[in-house]
Amino acid sequence: MKPKQDKEKQVVQGKRPRVKLTAAEKSELFAEGVVTVIIMLLLNMSVIILYHLAV
Image 1 (cartoon, rainbow, N blue to C red):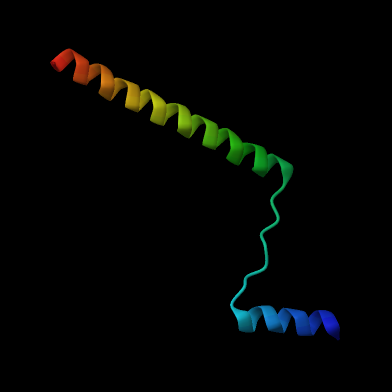
Image 2 (tube, one colour):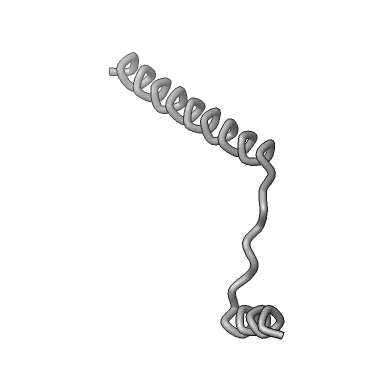
């Protein structure tokens, strides 16, 4: 009975149950984050280079 009451309390409080990610999904998300950071750094560097060429 207690686990059922805990679930009801979570719904009342508006909390959702945590999503369980597999190891493959976690590593894929981490790799996507690294790629995103690299792309953002390259974009920033290209803007700086274009600015210096224009001045």
